[in-house]
Amino acid sequence: MPSMRPLDRLAKAVSPVLSPLAKPLTTPLTPQDFLSLINPLSSARQLRGVVTSVVPETTDTATIHFRPGHGWDPHMAGQWARVGVEIDGVRHWRSYSLTTAAGEDPAITVHAEGLVSDSLVQRTRPGDVLHLDVPQGDFVLPEHPRPLLMLTAGSGLTPVMSMIRTLVGRRDDADVVLVHSSRSAEDALFAEELAELSTAHPGLRVVHWYSGERGRIDLTSTDTLDELCPDWPSRAAYACGPPEMLDAAERLWHDADARHSLVIERFAPVVLDGQGGEGGVVTFLRSDREIEVDGSTTLLEAAESAGVMMPSGCRMGICHTCLTPLRAGKVRDLRTGEVHGDEGQSIQTCVSAAAGPCHLEI
Ligand SMILES: Cc1cc2nc3c(=O)[nH]c(=O)nc-3n(C[C@H](O)[C@H](O)[C@H](O)COP(=O)(O)OP(=O)(O)OC[C@H]3O[C@@H](n4cnc5c(N)ncnc54)[C@H](O)[C@@H]3O)c2cc1C
Ligand code: FES
Image (cartoon, rainbow, N blue to C red; front, side, top):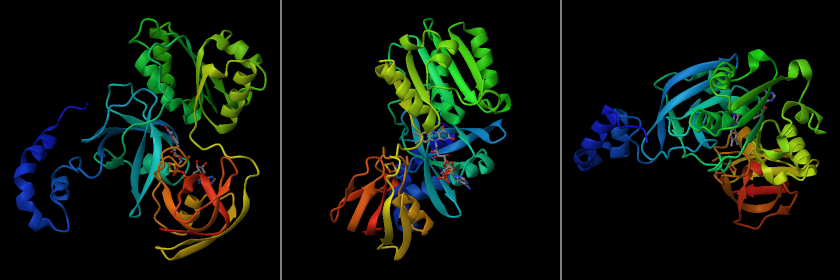
């Protein structure tokens, strides 16, 4: 856990004294809100972190280091956390892998490619406050790692970087081959540090693949992997990158009868091709809004385009933060194609689309 800084100590020390006195003075703010003016990390209601530094990595990627407040759990290498950012007065949540080694203060490395990531990369400054949720996820190092193959592309390197930083240099038996694809040498994340680590530690071999020169890594046959890492079938493999790469890796390991050796981290849900159904008019009852959408637009995206404040987290069907009660109509699960919907049923809006007109209680 991070050590307690002077402001934390002050907030903790005055809290029992101030709380009873402050209550009548601060309504509707609570004493905790009042204390969070002294120390933004002291809120008991919402986990937060203060940005300590922002380090540019490539032209459109930056690493944001932060000091989490009370309630944060130390992360395991490879885990991710939900991060909430205020943009134009609205708080948006997205998930980001934690890139530092286990046991160190956390950081996220963000590639600017949309609303929240652009804001994080371009506007975050030391001293800013991030809203947080505790680290989670199963894409983590095994307790006794056997020889490893890490297969990553683009920002998919982020969880694996935490694993490499945790393992290499700390364990004599580390045996890691990293095959990382980026568009060009300039786009390759953490390239300098990886070069230093592999020079210092023979247990790490780094293979850069530049798709701008060679095209994407071909995983339709074993030829490329045989060339880059000949003993790949005997290694425990961890893969993170764009959906097409992960789908191809799944097929390759499956055909090689080694699917059990491959662990995959996805940044987006697997949706079935052609599962977009009829769509329909979606009504957001409490917000008094409605919007007509096609059958492949998620209810979460529909709500956000209609200006409805929606809870969300991973946006890929794993965290359940987006559950919203259905009041009428049917929805389609874009991962399975299943159409369902009973009145009052909680819907995962990030992976569901309208299947005809439907009403949501929000
Ligand atoms: C477990 C997990 C871990 C993750 N870890 C990381 C990480 O370490 N680093 C990281 O950078 N991301 C990570 N992500 C992805 C991250 O959560 C966000 O999805 C990502 O930053 C995009 O969010 P956004 O708000 O910027 O994009 P949104 O505005 O939500 O847009 C979503 C997608 O739409 C596309 N898009 C947006 N605007 C346009 C446009 N104008 N034209 C064309 N396409 C567009 C982009 O491809 C974008 O990815 C992770 C996701 C998960 C689920
Ligand atoms: S936002 Fe995580 S399950 Fe929908």
